[in-house]
Image (cartoon, one colour):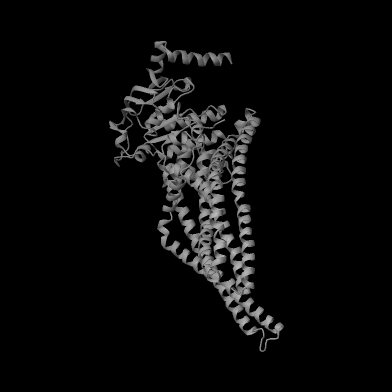
Length: 613
C-alpha cells in the first residue's frame, strides 16, 4: 500500500530507488566526507597534537615501571646474593612512581582536551551536513518526492547523518590515538630492543594480509544494511501514517508480511556484515598472541645472556600487548568506517539529486488579475508526452472546472500551472506574462489551494491559519475563520484559537480540518484559487458549511476546480473535459450537454449510479 497521491503517470518511485544495489565508491565518498572536515583544520591539528601528548605520556609509563622493577629486582637479588651494600632503593622507587602518576594524570588531561575539541568538530561538521541536506530538500523538484517514500528520505536525513556524527566523534579520535600509539610504541620498543621489535612488527603485515579480504567483503554487506534500513523505515512510515486504511481493508497480515520480508533482509545483511567483520577481532588476537609467545621466549634468552634487563623485558612485554590493541582498534574502526561511508554515500546521493531548473529571473508578479493562458503546452514525466498541444484561455474572475476520469491529467495540469514541473514545450501565461519569467516563490504566492488531503502541522490553530500570512493580526485571523464558517467550532474547543493540533491533526474532525484550510486560504487572499472538491468524506450538514465557505472564498477570484461530482459545477464559467492528458471538450455545462459527447456520458453515468444506489 502507498499513501502517495497526486500526479498521474508520475515516476516509478520507490521501486526504482530500492533497486540500487551496485557496489559503492568507497574512496570517492571518503574523500568527499573529508572535505567537510577541512574548515576545522586548526581544531583537528589541535586534536592531533593533544593525542600525541596524551599518547607520549601514556607510553612512557611502562618504561618507567620497568625501571622501577629493575631497581627492585637488582636490590632484592643483591641482598639474596650477600653483595655488600646491596639494598632496595625505596626513595628512587617512590620518585619514579610519583613521576609515573604525574605522567598518567597529564595523559588523561590531554585525552580530555582531545575528546572535548573533537566533539565540537564532529557536531559542527554534522550541523553543516544537515544544513546542506535541508537546503537541498528545498531545491528538489516535486518529482523527487513523488518518486520516493517519505521514510526513505527521513532515514537519510536522520539515521545516516547520525551515524556519520557518531563515527566522527568517537571512532575518528580512536583512530588518531591508535595511529599515534602504534608509532610511539614502535619507538619505545626500538629503544629497548631492536631484535624483539622486529618480532613484533612482523605481526603487522601478517595482520593486514589477513584482514584485507575480510574488509573488502564486508563493505557490500554494510551498504546493504543501510539500504534495507531505509527501506524498512519507509515501510513503517507508510504503515503508521496509513494505519486506518490498513485496518479498513484488513491489510494487517499483508503489511506484517511485507515488514517481515524487509526485516529479514535487514537481519540477513546486518548478520553477514557483523559476522564477517567480527572475524577480524579473534584473528587479530590470535596473531597477537603468537607474537607475544615469540617475544617471551626471545626475551627470556636475552635476559639470561644479560643483553637486556628484567625490567625492560617486562616493559617490552607490556608494549607488545599494547601494540596489538591499537592495531585491533584500527581494524575494528575500519568496520565502522565501512558502515559510515555507506551511510555517507546515501546522504551524498541525496545531495547529488537533480534540482529544480535554476531560475534566470527574480522578477515578481504584482497582484495578478487572474487571466491564465495555456499555449500549445506539451508535457510528459518521461520521454512519452502525457499532454500534447494543450490550449486553454481563462479570463480574470472565471471559475474553471476540470473534469475527467482518473489518470486524465487533472492534477498534472495544476502542477504545471504552479511550476512544480517544467514544460516540454509551449508556454503558460498569467496576465500575459510567461510563468517562467517569474520567480517560483513569487508565482506561487498568487495561488491558494484547498485540497481533499488537508495538511495541517503540529501547532496551534492560530499558527495554522496564519501559515500563508505570518504577519496577520488576531482580528484578521478571526475574520477569515468567520468567512470560512470555522469560528464557531474553534471557540467550542477548550483553548479556542490556541488549541494545539497534534501531529496528524486527529484531535479534530475531517470536516473541521477542511474549514481550517479554507480559512487559511481566505486569510492569504490569493488572486487565483485551486480547489479540489473536499466534501466527499463529511456529513451533509458539514458539507453545507464547507460549500458555503468555498463559495465565499471563490468570489472575485479566478478559480480552478478539480471536480469529482459534476452536479457541483453546473454554474462554472468554463468546464474542461480531460482524457489521457488532452482537453477533449470545453464549454459551459449546457453547451457540453448539448454536444452529447464525453461529458454527457460522464454526467449521465454519475446520475444513473445514484439512481441505482
